[in-house]
Image (cartoon, rainbow, N blue to C red; front, side, top):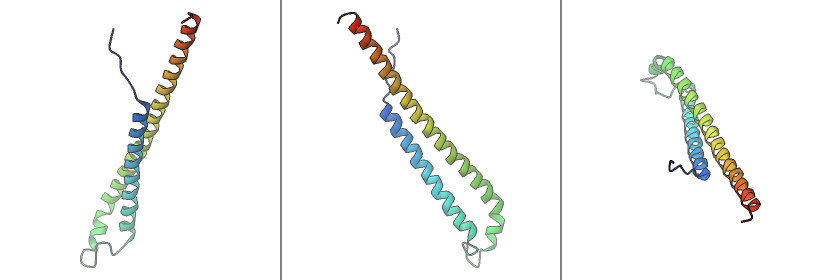
Length: 106
């Protein structure tokens, strides 16, 4: 028989929190990026023409950042759901064994 495995639901929840913190950092990137996009003087007078050249790239970058942030949120939700499922499964299994033990008279 295999040695099995142990899952700590709290560690999974901590990992989900880490993913959410990373998602928040992507939100900060989006915010800073939109500020630069809206500011005609973000590059100064000498290099102001650069913003026009970078606009297409900026839009693609914004789309990718949005996609990654959304997926981090989805991953965090899934990890939290796994933690809940493991916890529920452990509780249900423990309850079933206790009931069996009491029926056997131990």
